[in-house]
Length: 238
Image 1 (cartoon, helix red, strand yellow):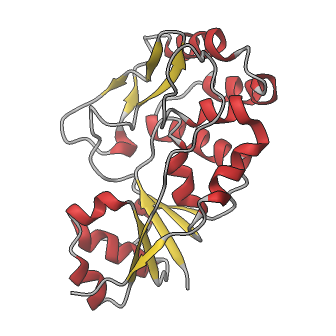
Image 2 (cartoon, helix red, strand yellow; image 1 turned 120 degrees about the horizontal axis):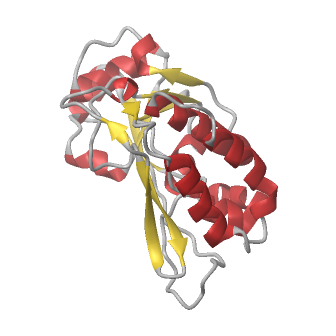
């Protein structure tokens, strides 16, 4: 059985994103689908003394533009501001020094495309979480369909027998198409774990950027993926 995960990139995404990758044998990045202005492709949340705060990468976005076409607005010193906010709020964390140097180096590269920034940060986090699977771009595959058919064709292009989906996929995926292609669908089961966050006077905030977990839990962050290693299988029957 070869399991594939298929997803758009996000800006320093949350632990559940990486949990899905840890369950897969291959990750296909949906880089040639439409950019969502109010999505997580260019922003994510960290924890501050006042609660959750967005870190947003400014982009020069045009309507119906694809993710791999979106350009970062380099007139705005976003990297310096993000790094300053990260340092202000996470420098007291137990594992901040373990990750800070590499993270700063990535953020301060002269990025032009949002997609490239997201990939670099994602691969960095995968390495820290010991997720070792191939990363393939959808734009490099012979995929022409849309919606569910796009997913089916991507599975076929990488010879995957099984597709792992977030439970939200139940609301829009046509499972009959997977069944017709003899591709099994399994649903990711992820429950946000609790751990010792900074600023305990503020209630625990789940599903923050992976930075929160790494800075607070260090190498033990991987344990959260292993503890939820099981997924519920559901054959894609009509």
